Image (tube, rainbow, N blue to C red; front, top):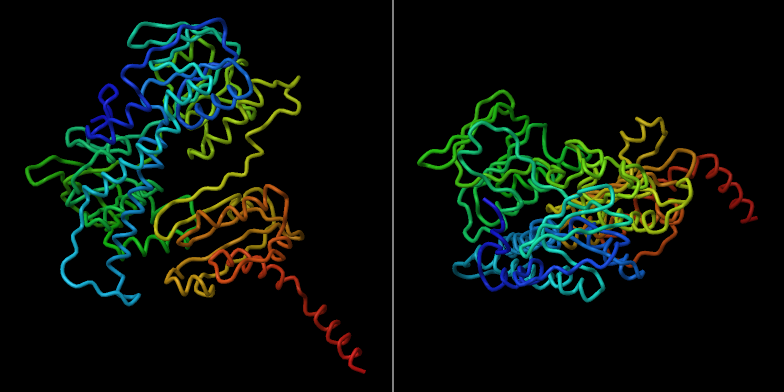
Length: 517
């Protein structure tokens, strides 16, 4: 099953027709190349779009190639539709607990999953203007709808509906993104399945849903569908959920998900799928016990695979493997005139990571420095991220184990939200803020926040780390009261209190006693 057939996005309604008209217009006519481009970009996801628009705004001659939908995964099958669904799921959950705030609803409440998805499609179509072919053309970008493929070290061929175009370039950027990885589970192919590329095309709520993979996408969707009313089974090969996060942080989310009806089968192995008349039967061993569940749909959420096929990378002398295109710290490939950005070459497969990498490509491709000195480097990026479950988990910088692996001594402090007034008043007091500070200094090495609005709050630590501001700066920063973000100040205050030594207190006590004479 595919999200799109040609340029038609499913389901075929007014909102998806508006989306397609923006990001893959059927009547689009590819321009005729006029001389060599300063930069040609393959892929109009976040990395490609940002690279193209900045380069064009600087006066460069730019070509942007996209074979599917401009906006890439983020707009069409990722961040935008998922957050639309998550917001609706949260509203449904809030409604079920509204009596805690003194509101009592008489009679039956009608829940309409179809309306949830229609709202999501409407908002996605509205946002799609920002990534539209017509907008980018007006901004000075030559937009090509079709498949781009290298045919030499300095040329790319575009295969479009109205014929082929050959584009010569001084520099190029490979921003072709990634797709959902599908594990070799026996029986999966025959039973059929959903991925992030198809799940947002649903118009009816699956009564029973199996989710394979308890990473960010799997957890976000499992919790959302459970809140919509699906019976959800979340299967994960490792222990617990969100294996990249601190265990106590992930445990808070796991408990909330299980309280909301998600059935977790972790440490799962020997997973098999069988299509039956009753539905899709999943058999798996979890913690030494055999489990068998029957579902109506299966969602695969086990990671991402880079789109390196069909690009003619060999013809351009660009090295790659199953993990993606190989790049150096300047995002330069083995072809010195070709760069890469985004999911096709990054271990951080986030929209904001692709955005940051695109800006590095612009600096290094269009403004090269001799011998690489003074070039922008991906190694300098401070990368925050957030999983948009309820509560959210956000992180930036190192975890404690990362610092220890590098031989860096750290002091770690944790402040719980059940001691933050606003979190208590909001009924959102599950979670904490944690900060890692280099021992002997006030340098912040990393931070984790588990909270309802963690994604909004982690930026405070990101800015401090980027600016080189330490714990003293955050501790001395005034926060409005009452806000949940006060936890950021409270957690670094733990560091300040820890460094107020008994000997210093003794000295001050003597001083104050002397002053009373």
